[in-house]
Amino acid sequence: MPSVLVIDDDRAILALTEKALSTIADVETAATAKEGLDKLRAGAFDTVLLDIQLPDQNGLAVYCEIREFDRRIPVVFMTVEAASSTAIEAMQLGAFDYIGKPLSVDPLRDLIEKAIEQRQISSVPVAISADDKSPGESGELFIGRSPAMLSVFKAIGKVSKQDVPILIRGESGTGKELVARALYQYSHRSDEIFLAVNCAALPDNLLESELFGHEKGAFTGAESRRIGKFEQCNGGTLFLDEIGDMAPSVQAKVLRVLQEQRFERVGGNKELTTDVRIIAATNRPLEQMVADGDYREDLLYRLNGVTIELPPLRERLSDVPALVQFFMAQAKKEFNKPDLEGLSPEAADLFEGYHWPGNVRQLRAVIRRCVLDTVMPVITPDGLPKEITRIKAADNVLGGIPVSNETLDGAGLPQLVKRLLAEKSTDVYAEATQYMEKYVITEVLKSTGGNQSQAAEILGITRGKLRDRITTFDISLTSNVQIG
Image 1 (cartoon, helix red, strand yellow):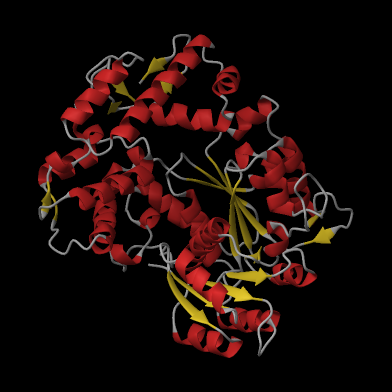
Image 2: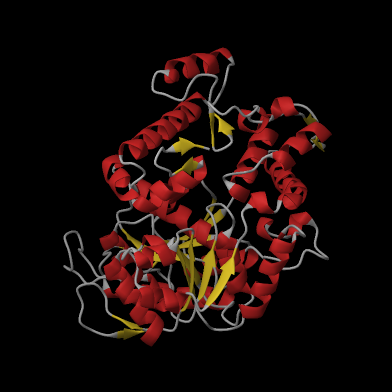
């Protein structure tokens, strides 16, 4: 389990944080700066929660010592006044974030979870070559000997130390963030900060604030100044995931940073400078988006200087056995299954024969589920999810994933639920929800003649999310929308 160090002289705060974070991390507490620094040097922590006002030393000075000891550990400041100039100064120095007192449990837990995730992103070593590494020592993306992956390895080796923007392209689940992490870890900036932002996960106004920061009063709810990622990441590497889902107004500001390394906070008029290396990723057809007027051509050219193409897993099925071994070793240790020996030959054949629409991410999820569910030393086809073992049928398969023995329509849901209950499934909600999602999206696309913009508007989702579902479900956009 991840570990968190909390440094604060208030016993009530220590008790609150210890209780609130106990479900997500092991919590160590310290009442003074000296005690906290001693524990930090003696242990291994994923995040530090630090009070700005300590009895024996100023929190900013403590932060500088933490930074000197380990530049990659995220530090979250606690302050009585969240809008204080001291907290802002801490953020400008490179702190991960700050939170105001009195502490609220849910925001605190969410923030610490993000910090732990950031620590894992920037600290887990990634091996480019698997020649002299065992599967347990390398990242899942970098397992395999297929020609497509060897080309990716070579590209990373060539450009990682070149201080230029890089665009990573590939389907969802292929490992674009792992490539970004490898580029960072093998760059000249590896001792500096690495931050990741998912552009599709935030509304346009919040994304702009997340990237560039905002001044107090810049918009409704902006009660204090906030430091954006470009400012926090000065000297380091910023990974912009799903760059194709960025609004035109934000595209213009990102282009300026790429060209001049200058920007302004939202609602501000002071020009700020930064030195950030940008790595971007997308699964979207940016060239088509430029032609449609949805994406800036000049930004595409700036991002597209160096491009790394990630192959889908179905194009490197020869790597599946090594990936399975790696994920199985991880899950065996995580779920404490010491007697697990592996997959039967029949099960292994099914894994290699499946087309994996969700790519490496889906493979990992399936392996984890198999290991978690098995009570036998060998995983056989009986222990595999039904999408892997079920025979394809043209009238009841969606993207290679058969969803039921009934026709894919609204009336088939009751039969599906009854069958799952009869089979004593422990995943009824997920399977039923997926069934209905496929049905609804397909029917809406049929009603719009395959027009994705209209379909996204009717569905109430973004075009990026719709495109992702179309790819996942293998929906053919012809005059008659069909299920693959």
